Length: 490
Image (cartoon, rainbow, N blue to C red):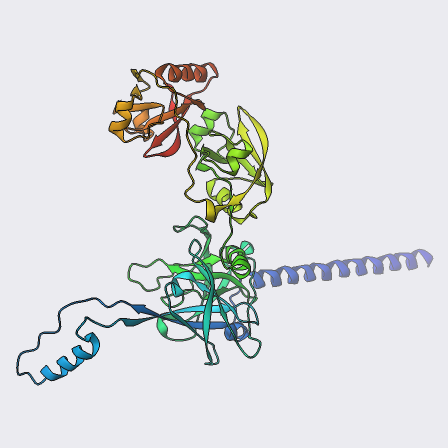
């Protein structure tokens, strides 16, 4: 009997273990199914979200005085019954001096970001306005004052004075938004009043025309009048400011652009504190690294930003040079010029940052104290006048090159201190033409060394060939703008 009792006990234990495993499997399946449904199912309704945020979204009406255009009065036949009417109309509006100034109105949207009345909108909504009127969801209207604007990102900050604390909405993290995530836009399209549209994020990191552009693309309907309004995630957080549409006819075709909130928040914080933006300034001109440029420099990939010019400024003081490739800025890897511009612009003015550059087939770390871009734009580095040399002409790499003389500088409109080799003609079948070089371009560097003569240029070619390079990296100036070009050494 004892063996039978032991067998029965073992059997019950196995049943219990199997049953536990079965229920654990079912539970895991339910969890996975719930996660899948949560990620993929369309919201049943946006009504709750709309109710949550609508009190913080505003309509904006601006008024601007527009100088009247002069012109002839309407021609009315003599003796016409309208003759007296038009005469009185013209006398009242022209006063015998010309037409009186008229008032122009424009409509847009915005949203409240603090209970004390700060409001975000687009710069183009309020640009040039004499009066700004804010209409709230309740119908209440308040005048607004302009705190500051940033045309580079098309963001403006307004302020209203209210008796009570205002409803407001927080910013969310635009960097976590993924293509396919649901979003909701709210605003005042075509002057129709408060309106809601919904859609998804259809693309990220769009660039339209500005240096600091970082747009979320959405198919949520955005029309004229939606400008400055918020784009919400499903938590009621603003992850974009509706700014532009792509349309052949002026209406929504499902391609709208919202400036990402992580750009907007930095701008708004500065406008709120200073009334203006204060972006970091490194002080270099840069270009992306192409594959042939990377090969000419001995780089493994095309990451980084290639320095084409170093005018007087923070970078020059820190020792950056033409031909350096900036690989890292303040601890952040640089993928391309756009990424570097954004990181520098977001950096604090006066901050000392570490910049890692590729130079002479190795890396160096430089410490740069950033200036302020807004006060530095337009600065040019002083150039020293080189010692004059007799110009020579030679056919090299499919180019007819000539040294610079005073007469040639005058003919080409070049500065007196310009130096290098001028491209006088090109082989139409040569590699230089294929790389986009043109007659009149001035080659100022080759192999990352300054050149003043044909002899200098030929020496750089030999150096590149001795180093096993397949192409020669040249710094070329066209109309004063520098650019690196890698020409094959065939």
